[in-house]
Image (cartoon, rainbow, N blue to C red; front, side, top):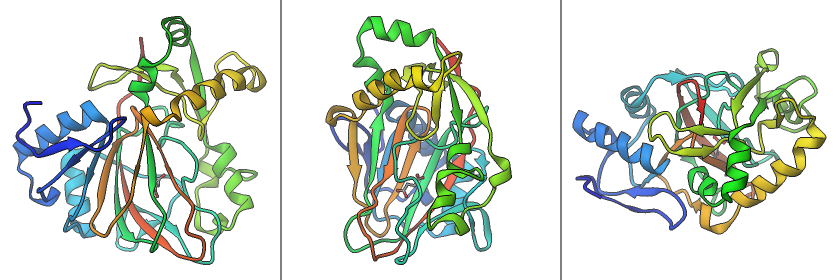
Length: 280
Ligand code: SIN
């Protein structure tokens, strides 16, 4: 592909793996190349990293501008790093359903950088979906219809006073109930960096099409969600100590598999600020 960096496809459907490189040691020129790879593929997985919180923070600052998650607890001493934590006594996990980070913001996050800190012996993989490829897999007729629509994204049903998380054993761990809100985005965006068309709705945060009721919206949203959740557009990452994953929140979905009851898992996430999204 003309890159000097050592990258290979991670799966046929999504992502690339970068090997034999320490993210913390990349030169400025490497970073420019990595950013091109990231814009192109939306998902970059890297293993065997020496990546303490300080390296995580420094790398994130070089890769973009950091934006804070409104609901997750920060890591002690690192207000820019959010904890994605599940204790062995807890049944619910954070991000356990398909979503993309911060689509409920007017200017949604560009990307996220997730680092494994404490892993269960088995399970706890993260799944990813490629929304650019999924859009290409739709018929021209449906693509054209979707290009004329906008959708409402929200976090109230998750983090609000009567939201999902309040009914779970994560309630005490999540804050920001008063910071919930909605945003409206085109259903098909032109990716701000790659210029590709991307399907920009997700099961976690999209609640309806603009001007449509929830009931009217659901059948089409559910059709799209089932279309994306197919093997040719999705992949699964099995975390090991030292694994780091970078994903583009405009062109991918992800979810954390909750299949390690009775064990704990701790991840550190830095979220990167994006640009306002435009339609076709
Ligand atoms: C997230 O949704 O950002 C967390 C993903 C994970 O814990 O694997």
